Length: 501
Ligand code: N01
Image 1 (cartoon, rainbow, N blue to C red):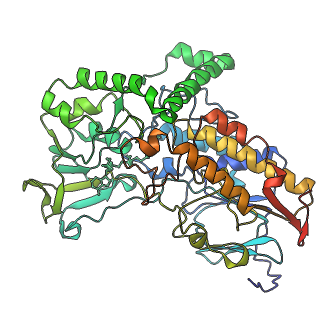
Image 2: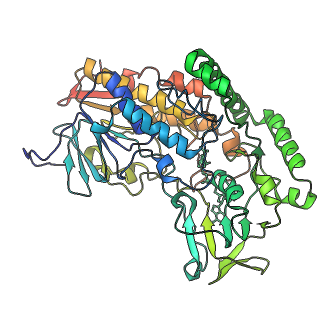
Image 3: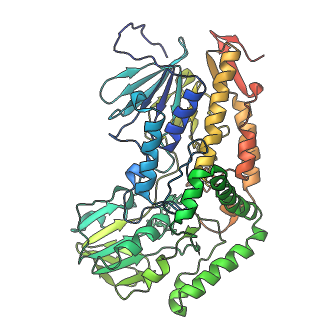
């Protein structure tokens, strides 16, 4: 692609451009600064930092990863109030990191990117924004999250419905649920967090379940005063809690990779169901028909009790259509509703589907990912030099805290930048054959995992049934794989000259 030479001073030329101010983008910024990079800009489409923790504001929104593990290792929060933090506290933590690390001067709020095009003559990206601003960074880091495009199902007659309708990730706080008949479609991680909070507020909550999910108790409780004091005065105590949380997430992965060991987890989940749901008919409806771990396990203590309230009902007969006044199920029953809440998850097939990203030789990300999202170590894509992504294909979707994965990737990217500097390379691009070999290995390893063969269709799989989310190992193995970039994996060039050796 040919680019005109411009000397326009309104064109910003930062060394590194990060897109997104969620935990991934901000973590990248902190580590860049620590490595001595000062010339970076972070673009944010909204007016506030926080990513998913800014967007998701539904009642009861919380993290199902223990707080001590859901914070950066380099910025521990000594003040968590609970074992599992809720959304407002996580958002406060994120804002605190921005302040503490003085990141705000680097952030451009209300700046949405409309296109990225690689200029092969200059080895720089041309990045344009909706407001017409142009950036020409050497390096781009995409940190706009894996779960940010709400999945709005195309259910028959949905446009006919006269009541209020919104997605759980775009909660409409102007809709007062008090005294209303509320229908909730979906029973995944988001739904089980807000259903107990709206039950008792609404006149009636109708929960529409398509498939039952596996549920395990959540070891949540407020942190004791003494624990918080110990965290503040003896940091190693919090590190011990973190270590325990780390292994709590790490050990189940071994069973997810070898489903013959899943029996223990399934037994624990069945016990939870038996203990919490005495009615055999309801219990049967809530018993999953696939192996545990195939979909993300739900951690909750109050979902089953909420379902047993007289003002909450569980419908499993399948949605036939929407009417003007509610939802008709396949058994012919009409469920009247004033408000419908879609807790139907996110579109994950191609997270850059709507992005205009043009790499080397005019290759678009849509062409590169025509057969499905693929990358090397979830961070680089062949054909897209000097472009990195955080939480890219097949780097998450297991059980380890996503923050652990983000930190591993951020480290890897900083190491790649060091590699470029040491080789005096202006361009770094993963070799197509390396990416192919890596993906052959990855998909072969995933084939026996519960995510692929557990008998369900989760958001880990794309519409062809190929797993585009999971890393086929423990968090520790991902950490090892991302310690040091292999120079042989990349084309490293300067003005076309090979700098790989
Ligand atoms: O979405 P989901 P989510 N008709 O995809 C149903 C993260 N997260 O927003 O199982 C009827 O899990 C679908 O049914 P089925 C976390 O990684 C993290 O709850 O496909 N139903 C399912 O029940 C999580 O995994 C936290 O049969 C339809 C539900 O909608 C991810 O976000 C908190 C349907 C979707 O469940 C997504 O969670 C919350 C249709 N057409 C979320 N389409 C933390 O704590 C879908 N469904 C960190």
